[in-house]
Image (tube, rainbow, N blue to C red; front, side):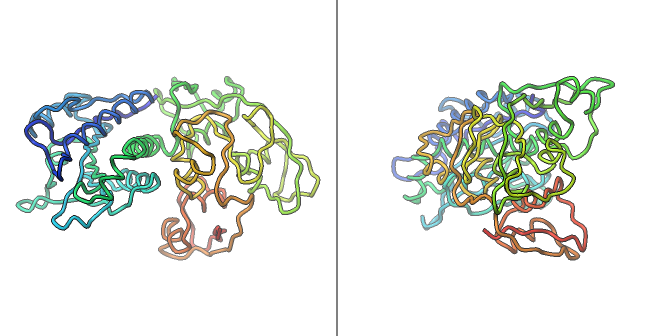
Length: 402
């Protein structure tokens, strides 16, 4: 199912305590974090190994050997080296992520954002160069680990009482966020469950043929797998939409195809296809067929979301520009576990977001526009039904303002 593997590293250990503050030692906390992270990846079916699961001394050379021996020296091996920070004043707080010179910032940024959504303060992502040779990484976990993609995650500062307390009380939540961010990034934003339907592409296959064989549509497969084209590769693992039930919805004043699609976790194109619509115009009282309602046929209220296969609190929070803690609070959730068909209340969702328009100019990107209007890329893409991040000069975008 997954085309990547993960090596979990518990920083320090044995005779190397790492940073120390009072009775708190970095090596103990990183071991606790790493063991839980290993179990989470394992539960989700991700190929995973761990450098140490006990309090043992592991030299840099041996640590690198264990990393490269786990799944080989390959680009699709992710290394998560878990650490706690320390500084001289004890006033700094928050998480940092350090990534290798050979890698892009995407994974590091997503991990840091996920930690922020999980309630930890965010500091920065960065790369650090070796002073004696600026072409090389400062940390051996980056410098000596071949082609792998290593991240050094500093969850906070051990000598800051507030930071330490947050880490001790919430480390499982932080680990869940990191795990979700890694899987979502490497799966193109989608986190498949271990029991999802998968299909391995064979010679002669096409999206049309696969959709026909599984009684679904090309658009549904592309949407589920975040595919931007119809091209497939032999051996590629794709997810097959599970067949759900359909229901109907009566259009009310203020409704739009976008607000209805957002409410029922589908797309405007899918609604138009299912209802044979040739335009986006709706009439009050018009009855629409809604695809794949997975909550036993009940109609969700505005401001709610139906959990579908592959959802996590992290990607739902990202989708609606909120955070995990707020979703858990208003739904009285005591854990991060979700069930398919579960109806969640979503904070600050009113059914259709007010918006303004913006004309794309030279040098613009979705990220820069989202930053300018205090929103996020996903919200702009969803509001404009964009399937990629490509923009054209002169293109008119709707910008969500709520």
